[in-house]
Amino acid sequence: MGTTYKVPFLDLGGLHAELEEELVQVFRRALETSGFVGGPEVEHFETEFARFCSTEYCVGVNSGTDALRFALIAAGIGPGDAVVTVPNTFIATTEAITQAGALPRFVDVDAKTYNLNVAKLAEYLEHKCGRERRTGRLFDNETGRTVKAVIPVHLYGQPADLDSILALAERYGLLVIEDACQSHGAGYFSRKANRWVKAGSMGKAAAFSFYPGKNLGACGEGGAVTTNDPELAQKIRMLRDHGQAKKYYHDMEGYNGRLDSIQAGILRIKLRHLAEWNEKRRAAARRYRELFGADGHAVVMPYEPDWTWAIYHLFVVRVAQREEAMKHLGLVGVGTGIHYPIPLHLQKAYQYLGYKPGDFPVAEKVSAEILSLPMYPGLTNEQQSVVVAQLQQFAIELAADETREAAA
Ligand SMILES: *Cc1c(COP(=O)(O)O)cnc(C)c1O
Image (tube, rainbow, N blue to C red; front, side, top):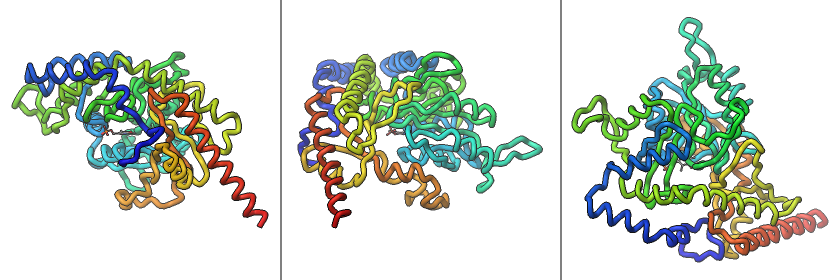
């Protein structure tokens, strides 16, 4: 903080400057009408975002965390249940699980995509779960909890392998709730449907976050659930609004989890630019690959299988001596981040789950090497050249040091 970076990690200022007049209009309109919560802006945004995601329904909520939590609760997940997810995600994924009353169970990720490893999920369901003979209930052997759902996280803007996950889920009777909080507009080629589909359109429901730094970001907090299930959508509308379908008639207890109308208005304006911004991020990702060149000087590029259309919420490389690399880049004015440094199963908050180092070796190894490089639609070629030159110089010096040490 306080440092001015030559190449900031994220630059929202440029995007907002271009849209400033339109964005300020939203606030003026809200002041004139005193419409701050709910109302037409929220409804219009919901319609437009559902269309963007190719889903029937979208319900605007206060955050991505709310979106995940409400989707789980509305889908009937609660105390006594377990929900399977990955350890290398933002804690909101598992907070939603525990706050719905359920217990998180982890499976490891793929070494190339860093997304849920479907073979590991199959192994977990086959060997670490059992079936109650009489009821058919699927339970986690270790905890006895009923395994009801799986949350694949489309990490960094790249969809997990949904066809395979959905097929497994069907076989085991699990719900799939997509954590699409980093993947607004990302594409997935469904072999089953034989066409491209949108992230957030395939599971029972999907959660999106409009935290300012996300590809579609509010100027404050925001989130949404997308689904094709009208009953689920209706339950989520009630959950976000104190369990009421009609004012002061509470069919159940809910939450204060609404999307406010100023954020909805802002999101409507920004949504019109999202496809173009995602294209720009993809172009920047291609440019990084070109600049790093074939050998990459020991910098491992993100892997994008041909069945995904990633929208690069983050551009995450892997380097040796990550902390040193990060420090070097910071000193020369390049902002970077780590998403995420400690896998959830090793976080203090989850000590009670009883996991230990070595339980998820891929997530653990990757978390020690990943480095998120600057990525946003306005990133220039010159800025990218600086990032790459600096990181390569670091890698070359590191290799020279190692050679020297080996010779000594
Ligand atoms: C951002 C994010 C969330 C939470 O969204 P908020 O709007 O900050 O509550 C959940 N999951 C993932 C993977 C995220 O990146």
